[in-house]
Amino acid sequence: MSNLPARKMRPLDTSGVFRSPRVGLVADWVQLAQELRTLTDPAVAAVLLFPRPDSSALSAVASASRVEQGHTRALSLWLENTEDPSTNVPPELRRVLSCFKVWLLPIATPGACYGMVALPALNGSETQQRRVASVVCDFALRLEGAERTRVLKRLHSEELMAGHIRLTSMPANGLKYA
Image (cartoon, rainbow, N blue to C red):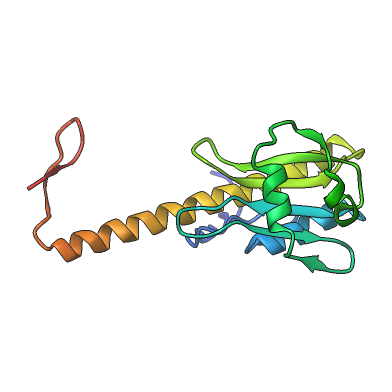
């Protein structure tokens, strides 16, 4: 037996918000754009969330002085069909993004693609690129978790409204309803 003190257990965070040691909490797409801009300082960061069944497309472009949300249409037309990780900026967005070439990261999980992040081509270290990719991945996981929670709540409310659905057994191939 060692005489080392027992490690204090940390409480589990069940809120669906993932904590990153570097960036803290990223609550929405606007804060994501601001955080990515600070990671790639003094660059500009653009975030586009694709339209979902329950919401329209959303965007934010963060620069050193402000955050703009009025470029959703232009970003959507450009990024919804772009798959190349390094691409040229269309002329109408060059002034907004302050560059000619960007590095694109999908806001994606293995199950879904939620949007894209456009950052001026990073000439920084691989560490900086990994940090940026990590923040984007965490944000995608949170979006996926929120979507799952929404679906489960909707299904639960539909079951309650139906009133007669209840679980009777669990066979090897899945759930069976009475």
